[in-house]
Length: 136
Image (cartoon, rainbow, N blue to C red):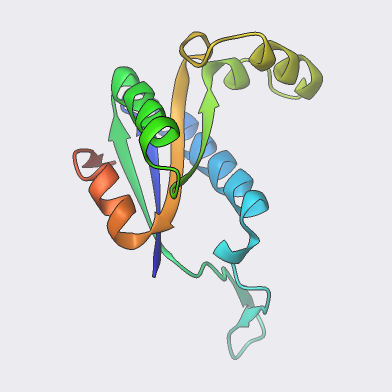
């Protein structure tokens, strides 16, 4: 069983937090197509519903906690997948080439990470994210 956790910077306004969560989930689904079912989930009225296959939780953390999480995953937990999104990306909407260039010349800390998505085995995701609070 897998689990997905989206951890957002605790001071994001609700609209920005929703946007970051959507961007992270979209990127994760491209990186790992198994997160969603390939077969449509249809109700009796033939309306399609989301085919997410694994439990997803949205949590909150401070900026330093996000950086520490990224470092922990990259150095100590190779079996956990992750993707980040930053203020650099927030400020460069509809300017992908510029965004890509700016990210490539900055250290992670300089990008001001505002969200991290992690996914993998349920117990590993829970253990790695247990200190973060549910976003309310």
